[in-house]
Length: 251
Image (tube, rainbow, N blue to C red; front, side, top):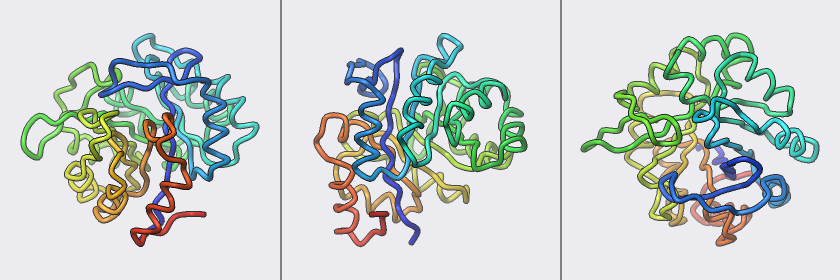
């Protein structure tokens, strides 16, 4: 079994780290750089920064935040939100990001996936998907922080995007996000059965048994926000729970 990555997720609005439930009802948590440094010190495997209003305002304001964090954090950093062009990707990478997560712009122009993958490598091109359940065993892909319908079947879209060059998938189950009720294991199983690239689960982590459940269906990493931001657990707590369940994690 592959090593399970524990990945703090920091959703950003303006200069602030925020957190909501199902991507709504946002509350300010604190300074994103301070939280990122804390998670790095606790042993995070990677960190994800997402500008959650960037697509709405058609800009990404994370360059300065990423630049400050990258000076002191020596693990992979993924940045998402409002990335629409190769120039945007270049700005994020020059600021210190290792990977970019793209949702809205990829759906609007799927060729962007291939362009990023060819220019910077598939490992840099992370497909960000916001999925909402719309029937038994069915999910629709959404954009703009879970606000806008696309009409796309989420699993079909992921399969297509991987064929275009996406090297990783950041999969947010919007129905679960911020609820602490557990990951959408059925969704993770369905996606992992269709693609061979790493899949990061996001949305709903709460029961520690989800670590094993997610790993058992092939999930590569778990992006965690609520449990870490409100200090219900530390990164090391989560890794110890994983070890207790027989999973391999980095110390």
